[in-house]
Length: 453
Ligand SMILES: Cc1cc2nc3c(=O)[nH]c(=O)nc-3n(C[C@H](O)[C@H](O)[C@H](O)COP(=O)(O)OP(=O)(O)OC[C@H]3O[C@@H](n4cnc5c(N)ncnc54)[C@H](O)[C@@H]3O)c2cc1C
Image (tube, rainbow, N blue to C red; front, side, top):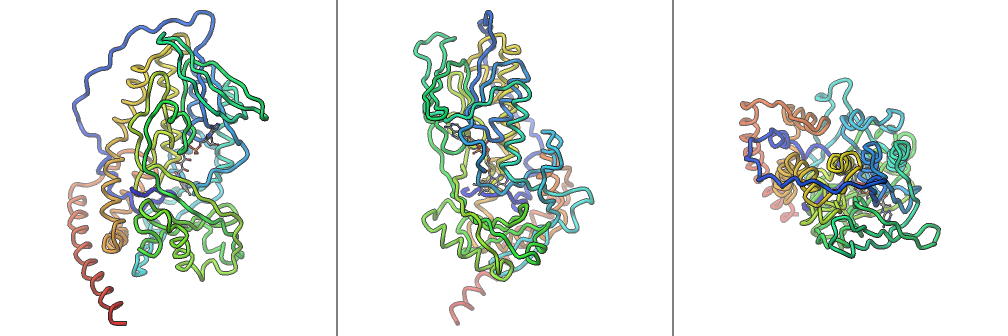
C-alpha cells in the first residue's frame, strides 16, 4: 500500500478485471505421501487468536473432527476496525442479520478539490447494502459458534510456542500460555496462527516481518440530527491534508461514527492527518463527543513465510489485507476456513498426522490461486490513485461513472467474477487516461492559484 485501512469500495473498481480467472499453468504438484495414523486419539490443533480468522479456522477444524483449542487473550475487547463486510459474507458465513448495526446504501467520495461523487445511490440494487457491524459482536458470535461445533475456547494469553524438539514427523509443538496469571502448557500437533498483526506465532516460526500501515480513528458520538445524516452513509476523503498515501473516512457505527485515517509513509504524522480529516468534516461532526481513540497496524502485504512445518498463518498474521480498500475481515475468515478445511482433509478427519507439504498444497496453493493476483493488482491501483492529488482527483472523477460503480460493487459485495463488457472496459481505460490528463491540468491550476494568493 502502502496503505490499507478500513474498507472502502470506490478504490477497488478495477478489481473485477482481475478476478476474471486466468488460465495459468499449474505449478508442479507437491508430493502427497501417506501420513502416520494417530492411534487412539484425534489430531490436536491450537488456533491462536479468536478474531474472524481464528474462529473460522477453529469452527472448520472442530466440525471436521480435529480436537481444537481456540486461544483468545481478551474476548471482551473490540478490535479497532471499521466493521464493514461484503454482503456475500452474511450468507457464506451464516451471519445472522440481527448482528448488523447499519445498512450502508450510500457512499460519498470527496477529492482534494472537494469534488464529491455519490457512490451507490443509483447503482446499488434495492436489496443491496454494505453491512456494518461492531467487531465485539461479530467476533464473539463467531467464537461461540466455533465452540458450539466442538472447539475448546480458552481465555488465555499465548506467551510462546516451542517448536518440536526432535525431527520426528509426530513430535509435538508446545503452546505456553497463561490463564488467570497461572502459567500452563499444551502439546499439540498443528498450530494455526491467527493472532493478528503482532503475531507471536509468526515470530516463533521466523516468518519474517511485513510493512504495516497505521490506522487511527476516533469514535465520536454525534448529536441526533448529525447522526441522522450518517445513518446509511459512509464517506471517504482523499488529499494530502488527510493522508499522503491512503484515504480518510467517516463510517457510521451503531450509535456513533468512526472518523479516521491511515498512512504507511508518514506514521509519525498520523495525528496531523487526523486533524486534517476532522477539519474537513468539521461542520458535520460539530457538537460530537469523542468516546474512544484507537490505533492499530494494518499489514501491507502477505508475509514471506506463511507455512512452516505444521504451523500455518492466516488473516492479518499472514498479511491478508487488500490494498486500496484495507479490507481484511472477509479475507481473515476465508483464510481461516480454507486452512481449517485443509487440515481436516489432509488428516482425513483428524485421524492422521499432517505435514508441511499438506499445508502448502491444500491451504497455501488454494489461497494463492484464488487471491494473489487480486492483491498484486490492488497494490498497483493504490500506487496509481493514492500517490498524488492528481491521481486522487482522477479517482474521484472515475468513481462518478456508473459502469465503474457497478463493477466495483459486484466484485466487492459478492467476491466473485463480475461480468463486465469488454467494450466498457476499454472505455474505462480511455476515461482513466482522460481523467489523469484533466486532473493534471486542474492540479497545476490549483498550485498556481495557491502561489498567487
Ligand atoms: C482502524 C481499522 C479499520 C478497519 N476497518 C476494516 C473494515 O471496515 N472492513 C474490513 O474488512 N477490515 C477492516 N480492517 C482490517 C481488519 O480489522 C483486519 O483485517 C481483521 O481484523 C483481521 O482479522 P484476524 O482475525 O486476522 O485478526 P484480528 O482481528 O487482529 O484478531 C486477532 C485476535 O488474536 C488475539 N490474540 C493476539 N495475540 C494473542 C495471544 N498471544 N494470545 C491469545 N490471543 C491473541 C487478539 O486478541 C485478537 O482477538 C480495519 C483495520 C483497522 C486497524
